[in-house]
Image 1: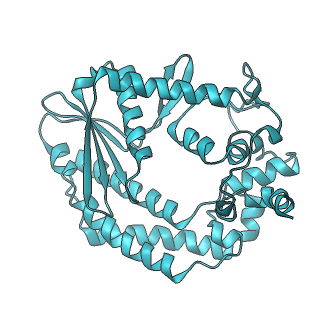
Image 2: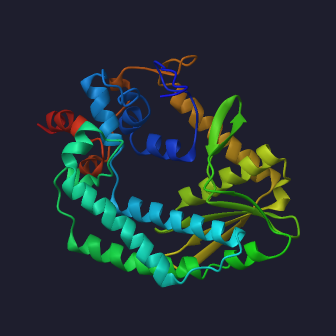
Length: 315
């Protein structure tokens, strides 16, 4: 791999998704960010290789979300080239095509996934040989149609087509520094309106959640820190496509200070579980507690690594 430099430990960074993982289960957090590190290497120890494999598992709702965001990105790129917004039926068929592809690879290529987890998409249900319920399939099937129609009907496309609108980023990874910690921000869409307002758009295929508001508030902090935009010139829009619902947010200086304070507090909690913060070296696995919500464990991608310990804890 050109330019690859092996690291004993992963680089330290912070993101909303990292915080969500930490809050849900510290052991899951350990496996995702530390235990799986270097697990892709041919000489990796068994646990690291297994953690890396399990980290690659996905589920139908995640696949739907990824497919929807790819379709949105294609629409943005098309508008930039002067093309019309596609019909809802076209978007729906493309999403279904992507789900069918992942379903087939999960059904047919489990052995290849075990050997090369970075080469194959694998649904958690197939890996753990769990039946996908008819209820889940019906929900997914219904949601595909709902989000396709809502995406095509979004008011964003008309705004992007206005003369004077500046597209800044679409599904683009970026970072900014907060107390020397790289903080990841990946807005679904960021553009500047003709009247100078910076607009963040985040599309959701699921239900409303406070974490979503925290996420776009962090993106607002990113726009402020990275692009030097005053808070009063930043707007965020959450579009819940399956609910046909929009939620708009404005920000003050105090709002962004509160976002930064919450991020710092989260970083401090995480760093308390490091044996050597200068290396981002974690304490032992046992220092990362299992969640108290044990009923959720069978649905976690890392269940295979925790199963024996969980069974002993109830025996």
